[in-house]
Amino acid sequence: MDSATGSANGSRSAALLAALLARYVWALPNTVVGLALVPAAFGRRAGFQLVDGVLELHGPIIAAILRYGVPIRGGAAAITFGHIVAGRNRDLLDMVRRHERAHVSQCEHWGPAFIPAYLVASAWAFVRGRGAYEGNYFERQARNAE
Image (cartoon, rainbow, N blue to C red; front, side):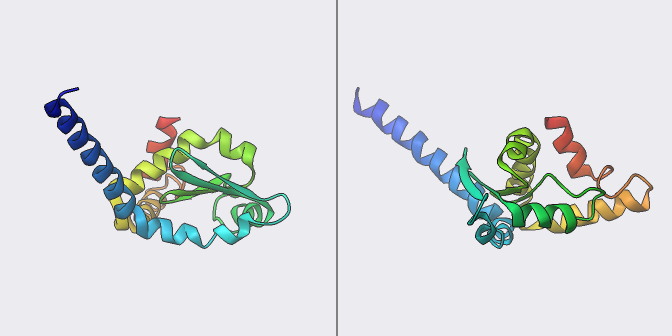
């Protein structure tokens, strides 16, 4: 390996690392919201895992929050906040991974504006009679990624 090739590879690696770090930092305000769910991933029948740079959480407390605390008929199977995805259980996390990764990408794109933009999109869809969840632009985009 000559010094020019090594230097070019090192520059590419540094650029990739900088881009990755920028995505995590830009999405950090959303991830901080998700950190509130981390304690619920400890205890009986609860757990967490790191999958492709995303912390996935599950457990009975999270399941109750998703079932009764999310204003969707029947609750949600999972929810994404930045680089944290909380799901009712590990099997459901496996099933909805592509959908939730679309939301991770949205958080990386929109950064601190994601949660307000998501709420505005829900309100707009509701006002237009399309359903706050079903008609939400971000949810439609995530369903298309499945």
